[in-house]
Every structure is written in C-alpha cells, then in structure tokens.
Image (cartoon, rainbow, N blue to C red; front, side, top):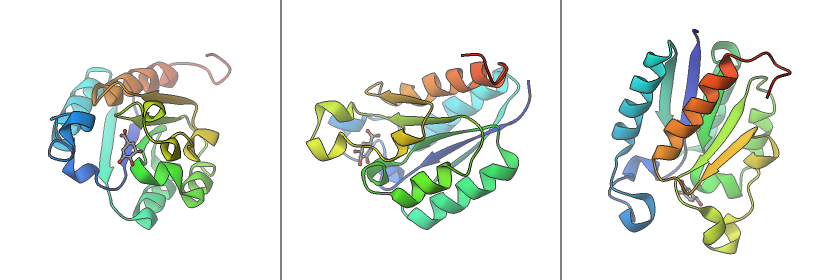
Length: 151
Ligand code: DHK
C-alpha cells in the first residue's frame, strides 16, 4: 500500500495537552503526530500532519490534498460547528474523509452537537480521546485497500 493521508487540526489544538486536560487529555499534538506517523509507516502510508488556528489555512490544505492525498482525517475543532467554507472545501475532495473529535461532543453543550463537516464525512470518531486519530487512521488504512464499492 502507498499514499499520503492528510491529518488536519483546527483552532486551539496546538495547545493540546495543556488546554482543559480533563476534557482533551494530556497527550500533545506532537505525541498524536508521532503515533500516527508510526502507525501509517507500519502500513506503508505516509502522513502530512498540520494544525492551524486560521480557517483559510485549513481550506488551503484541503485543496492541496485534492492533488496529493488518498484521504483526509480532520479534527476541525470549533470550526466543526461553524464552517460552511470547510464543508465546501471537503466537498471538492474525492477520497474518504474521516472526522475526529477527541471529546464526546454529544455529551457536551448543545452548540457542539451540530457538525457541518459531518455532512461530508464518511465516518466520525468522537469521545475516544487522542486515540481517536489512530482509530480513524486504521479505518483509512482499511479504506485505502478497498475497492470504491466495498465497505
Ligand atoms: C475540539 C474543540 O476545540 C472543540 O471546539 C470541539 C473538539 C470539540 C474535540 O473534541 O476534539 O467542540
């Protein structure tokens, strides 16, 4: 298997490990990147791992993924609940899109229950902590080996 998976992270996730650890845990985004890089390499895939607090930057990475990635794993963070622009960008991408939330957003405030990104996502992980990224990556690895019609 070969190919590149983009793993994109939205606002405030640069503070992962320090920010509200009772909700988001103590692992840093660097830890998540290392774990995902190792897992992807074991399956012959590479990853591009990015974080930005700027909506336009995330959109630009999604556009870049159109040319270079076999799939996108995205934790849009607060943009999940607000960004039609990120949804529109993801709708230009033809491969699988998996949405990750570290916390169980459905157990939290009602404004976190709606996701624009879920209108495009092929799968959603929520409440699995930072392990959710690796679980999504395992699903992406499976999808990368499947024919488009298989599930
Ligand atoms: C991260 C955030 O920053 C919040 O804005 C989302 C998400 C939930 C998470 O659980 O990873 O509501």
